[in-house]
Length: 237
Image 1 (tube, rainbow, N blue to C red):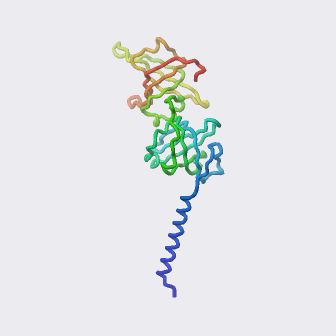
Image 2 (image 1 turned 90 degrees about the vertical axis):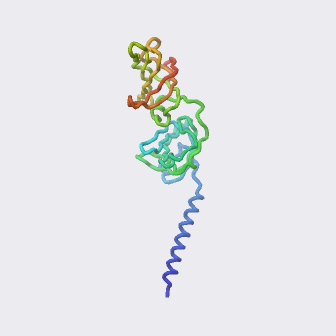
């Protein structure tokens, strides 16, 4: 007669061995190393490793992070997603535009867009950081939270120059800068204190500005507090 207790123990033991074997096997699977341009729908469900430059990084409402990773030589790009638990644990350096990274994760299709989903901070490595804080205007507008409180430089067309005064005393000049990228117009509110820019600049001048980016609650907008401004040729942007 079959001893049911022994049979149950045997079944449980075999199951545990099977689960352990699958776990050990999964840890030995090497990711496929591919270039960004070679990642397509045929790789959905596969673990891949690739590298490139961050061209924008945006924090989402749940404190996860969405990155656009690009090969600047070929122009190919792919989305990279860091869940909130991964991004919240990340302390390996600033993931800002211009940073070169290597990333490993599963290829997924989200909202009809391919992306690499990262499951651990160990699967992301910074290869090199940007040597400057100079960004295209569209990169800033796409990466506001990541660039918050940073000193940076950008360029664009100046418009809506407005001198700010209080009781006859000069406060500064507010203005917007604008530029286009992929048929989309991007603009950023700016202010420079203690200067009347209308004496040297006019709407539609092309300028290079350097300042500190921040979100100003009383205005309800992102703003660049400009420290330096210079005129550029139109072909410069």
